[in-house]
Image 1 (cartoon, one colour):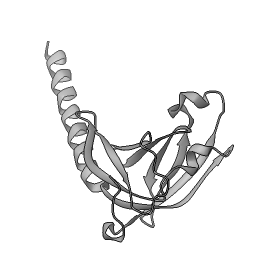
Image 2: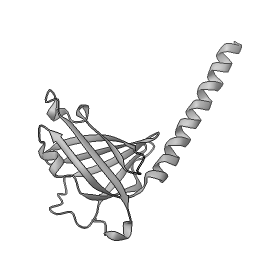
Image 3: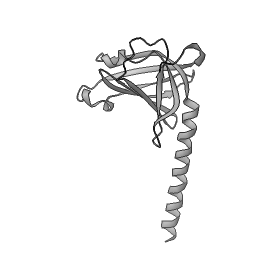
Image 4: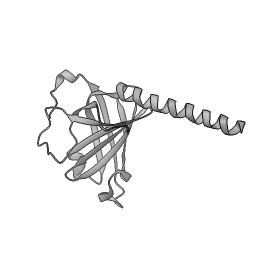
Length: 152
């Protein structure tokens, strides 16, 4: 009985820490960014639709799931109403999802020593590319939000 109670309390403690960490992470990641580099192999049309400048907002688009809206900045051309972009904190990493008219791609990025975030394309994100075995890399850096206006 003592082992069960101790296990329950330990699990409850770790769950509380994980939830608190996600909330802190969202606030610390929120802000404006620009893409420094992006590539994919084979070349995916989806990647060409990713905005070069965007804001990671704190607007939760799936309440309770720690999934937030990415807002393209004003310099984005040809914004399509069917496109949606989201992000979620993953401890010390960012998961960015870009759902475009050509499909969906996800990148998981982690902080580098020079303050940028870099990471790889996650092929498991888009079911329309199943079997394609796409690879890719993205690097972003934080910029001043006053440098651009968000598109609604």
